[in-house]
Length: 470
Image (cartoon, rainbow, N blue to C red; front, side):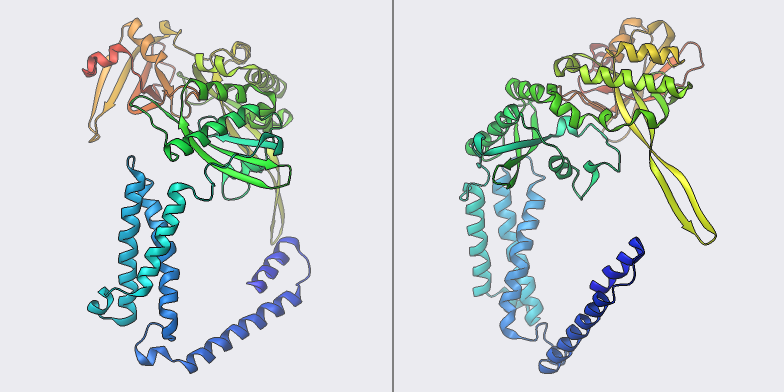
């Protein structure tokens, strides 16, 4: 591995080959090979039909395998169960430990009767699992209920799934470094005014103390998922994940966090786009999937600056009252890429397109788009719509179509429809992917628009035809 890393470094940086590291890699490989030959000569396990050459290692290896894999398997299966998660976790944990222990003993002895006999190593595994389970269930170490005092915190970061999960960032930004986008975001944001974040974290700790980390919600109620990072004045970083009921208090704190400029500046995708590097803007609304804004570079720059200003000024409360009526696809340069070939070097521009939600209240942006020949169509443009066809699919994939021509019905359906890419962070109003909406236009020039779905709270005219009205 040392030799391979050295070769990679040469390939990337074009430095001279670090022969010292290559030599270390070669020597280590030789030493390991000689040790393997020595062990084989001392205990040639294959000639004795044994899985393990050293008999005393059998219980050690068994514990080392069964203990972690039982926990991983139990966590993986029980996490997908909605109710009585802990009880299922314990049952799956014990069952998987028994199965794995029996399988390991069978590999050692190749005898079913022998593998089913109770052994000390199996008891040790079960005892270790019992200790871990007690520590986990009762939070003996205080991990889940940990909450540092405010005066010990230098700054905090928070990743709220219902907000941050909606946004896309450039692939070359710091938020895409590492294997976890959530952790990259937490590590590269810093909120020194963290009072509301701390209060939100406190609510998460209360759920851990009272309900074991699983908020009690009734039918129709929602759960808020978020992750918090505490950066202490001592220099230590602490990460915690919380789930709480999304009640009025939680939504109020979400609003306070969102409305702070410190949060918007580090979170809104528009802050990562250089207006001078924009190459193309396209529009998606209920009329068309992709209408290119054919205009000058200066006009595109003006459209983006206006849009950015309106989104930065949009309060959390206003965003809950406004509908997303479309999306702007903003393509911009991210840099130059050089690729070397046998006969020379090819230089080309590297671009990326970001999808940005267009709220109905962004009147200045919509006005500029209209001047550029891209009117944003909304539910108010009823006079241009001929009819709407609702395509409803059942659990077996069978589809039925329902046509609506009445202006009142069309207006209700459009006002209760959503694009498949976005939902409001404060409202649990999501697309119902079993109910697609097709729009037919009177002029015959617009596309028969698809990719729009009813929300999970359909209007009365739809409930009536589907016979689901209360």
